[in-house]
Image: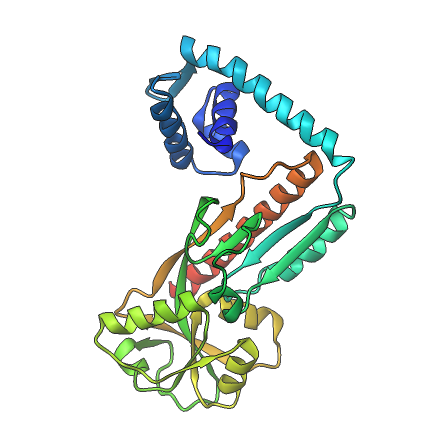
Length: 305
């Protein structure tokens, strides 16, 4: 039994609704239902009576709720008591994606919660390759469920495109096939998951393109800017360039005839205890990241429409 399961059980019991409890916990209804089902399976007893569109505590659930309420209340009081003695902790947020999403959030958080410490990190390719044994962050934005101890209540779709200098001699106006792309020199930032994803895309089509794996966005951007390569990247990266780099004359092409999309995740660490202020900050960060990702999805859908 995990602490997160108890918080989920309490939320559903209090709200009398999986839908409303999911909103409070910033997770999906289906994910929350699975957590409750797993808890009931571990306990060996049903805690709720279910009917279409309704869920209510049964007698076993009501009895269990008394103990859960007492246990969680005692734990939260203990955390508050210790917060006066413990040194200030740091809320950690990792980004394992190529999109630039944390800088603006970091500035907003420092202004909104001046009494808290934050560590916002866009992990480099080398840092991503050495995550084994790393202490899990409080929030992670990643192309896979890289930390097994975290919950991943939010999933989005990331679709890739081709980014090139407007002066690059390529005859295609809006779209390009993988076969056509494979004949061009390509650059890609050497994030481990991105490398694996790109190799999978071309492998499915039995293609072997020439790819230069760049150390970072500066090196990749330089290759594109000098018309040495075309870039392969999420459409969100093209959006970042359009919004933030006015003097970078680029255009983007849709990739047609191949599935160049993947799932990306926002993960939360529910195994740490937080003060009310820390929890407010974490929820603020999570909501802001989700809002940004929805905007990126909207941009991508418009780009591919």
